[in-house]
Length: 378
Image 1: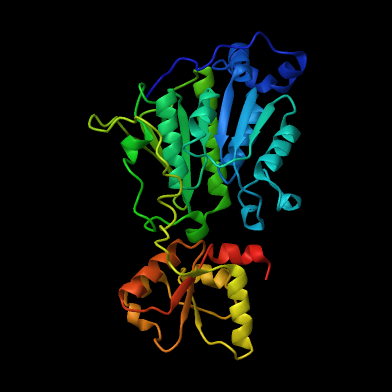
Image 2: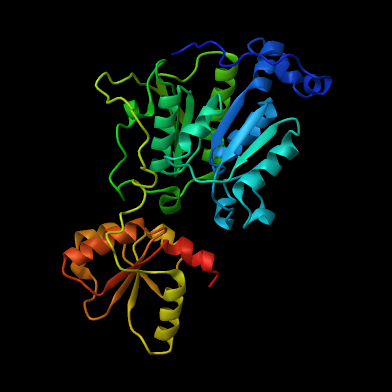
């Protein structure tokens, strides 16, 4: 376990309004007035205003972090609302950075919010990270995580990381030169399609709250120097068993040094296209109308899991889970063309490759999956 000095120098002082707002926090000996002034001086970049970024943003703002940057290029969707608590029904369709900034302002108008409504990339990650004292990362894809990890190494910036899936979550602190980095835990991204996303496997909203609040706690501790940080440990949460476990993590002496940022965003989360034949949601809707009119015949195959299909399905689709299809590609009828879909396009691309390898040429998949279908509003 690692005890670290405070991350930032304290601000000159607190206003009367700040002293009243943070009165209960000022009572904590580990924070006190000096710690509160450090929080006021701190600049924290939150990557992702989603399931983890939402609670982290609210608690960082409530704690009095002086400047909070929010980087996210997405817009609010209805399916976000059960876990992304900085957004409400009225925010659907808005930029997440705008909705998040409004939520922070309602929570604590004394906090300055900087909106970065762009996708983190190899071209901008270093400049974004270098402008902050600390990064809190709640991103939901491996490409972004590795960009953040490497940018933090190259800029010497500490990084609070969290991840969730289904009923489980993990939290850790990484800081090159002081302890392990993300690549000590996960040296390279997983093979495409081998790790499901929350959009494919689901997540309990309250798990996001638990993990996100733990991330905010670690950020406050790093800024103020309070307690022992998670640097050198990984905290693992199992909500079904309601347990928290702490696992030791040490730097890998054989890990290759990070020399530059590589354009890896999305590499582990989307299958490379390889010119795979695909249709967009509008074309699928047209084909379904033609099928209902008797002018076209094809099978729409949902390769998600039964629970996903039962919760929400494209009308007229049939369920063949990816695992079953990969085990026996020949199980699908060969007398009609196939259109495959999943949640976002990753699993359907894997299924398409398997079918092509088995000799099927009359197969396409839905670009963007059922997420794109829902966005069409059909």
